[in-house]
Length: 411
Ligand SMILES: *Cc1c(COP(=O)(O)O)cnc(C)c1O
Image (cartoon, rainbow, N blue to C red; front, top):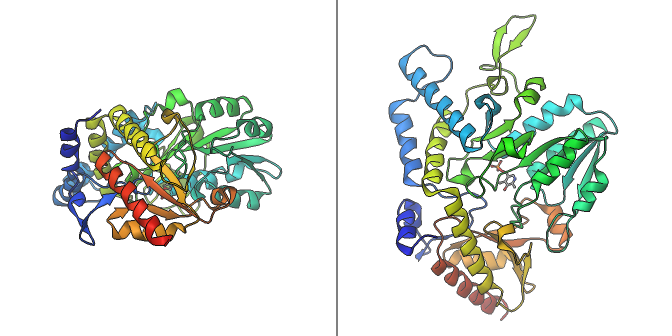
């Protein structure tokens, strides 16, 4: 657990936290959408353009070598960060969304009419729409695991659906709406018994949970840099080498070829086979600095601090008359620092606009999960999500601001 002084030290690394919003201090509680960036990351951006900007894997010259070396070092850094067996199992993409699209497109040739794909009703649109499109195209069937009222997956649905017909199971590790940590290891094990491949959407995970791909034994795992203090527009697809080697490339062009003639093209080996075109070189290099930041603080420290924030916030918010939580658990070890709720029958946008005027940034609306909104029979929610730089004082201010919003709107 951090002392107040340590948190202040961390906060000092985030210049944006000194910004004012309508002359109130900024209170940033929209971390599940994207986190703010520490000085280390901001400086790494400047450093990249000042000392190594050039294209990679092609130039013979000094700068190109330097940039290539940095990019490949970050690939190795990510390999270590998630305990993958080989660095060639790390494919750079523009983020979680592209990674899922890559897998869905590349697996298409293995999917036949009548095959089944299992997802859950809590998925982010980016882990729903690509599979829906694939099913429509191939005549495959989408099976959807439901949830209990408290937001936990109905695992008995999964056990009922899984069969030899199941080709892919794709589930989020932590729900971006409910914050619930799903029992993915269990799901992966059972899916493998039927020969199904498993993709885990880990967008909310890095810097929240310690990741070990070999222990998880997952086939595909995806996440973005920008939700773990890194830049936007860069993310990864982790895939088991044996499986990635069998898949067709997703895009075609430069970088991903070994040999091209007008008759045929021989593709590069992993990972370049899946990295057509000039990648987000800056993003990759700068992401390395974000990983250093997370490692310096320590994932378990970040996690236990966020658990404290969550516990404190739940204790305070619970006492607000008419508050309705979604994804409720009294066991905070099953939740990440995300709280979604509504106030009385107030529209989430109205509450969100008042919070914004008071300097508090939260997310409101369908949270990229419309089917989940339908499950709870609401058009939207208010989502508060914490990061390592949030404080107990900010939670007190949130609590008072919610009371203020209620007073104004229920007048
Ligand atoms: C943010 C998020 C995504 C999408 O990530 P992008 O970086 O926008 O591609 C997908 N799934 C979950 C659970 C998310 O939280």
